[in-house]
Amino acid sequence: MPCSSEPMEQGNGEPAIVARGVAKTYDGKVEALKGLDLDVNKGEVFTLLGPNGAGKTTLLRILCTQLMPTKGDATILGHSVVREPTKVRKHIAMVPQDAMAYSNYTPWDYAYTFCRLRGMDKPAARRKAEEALRAMLMWDMKDRPAQTMSGGEKRRALIAATIASDAQVLMLDEPTSGLDAIGRRNGWSA
Image (cartoon, rainbow, N blue to C red; front, side, top):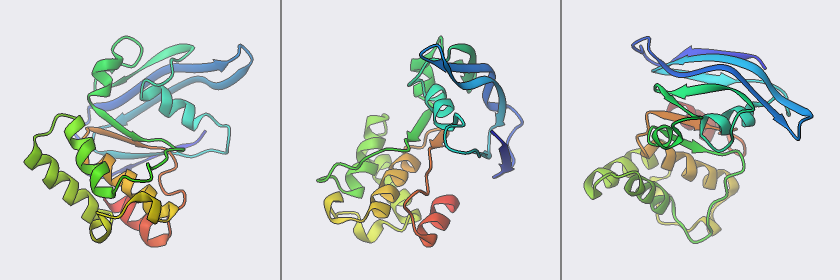
């Protein structure tokens, strides 16, 4: 699985993510990951590239503490995904590949509620939700229920909520899947 790292801004050189020997075998037969080593510095945008079945989603699920590795370990901001999953979760936010939007939720509901669930006070949550929705060109539809939105609009709402969370490490699995060219550009620049 090829990886690329493109500096988003100057990080301080300390790793945000470190993986050493991360392996995952399903049912004792299917090796999804075979001893992966990875370093991602703070302030970097890192992209995993590979064909279907290469282990990209498996790696993200391990980094987000949704799945335990068969071997190895990874750290997020110095916290082990194996030994300290609760501490890891305080620093991350993720949009899974197969995330579904609740039909009666609005983009505002997602962004604001996610901020509040992460412990922001109401004024900060309102400010971060608005910033993220504007960055994703969702402000004019902030009050529209998801059931009235296209698949790409729903995806943008979920990405906006993740951005609004102010998490130190954001993980997006196939983030531009279903987005048009403008949505992709805004997603990457947000």
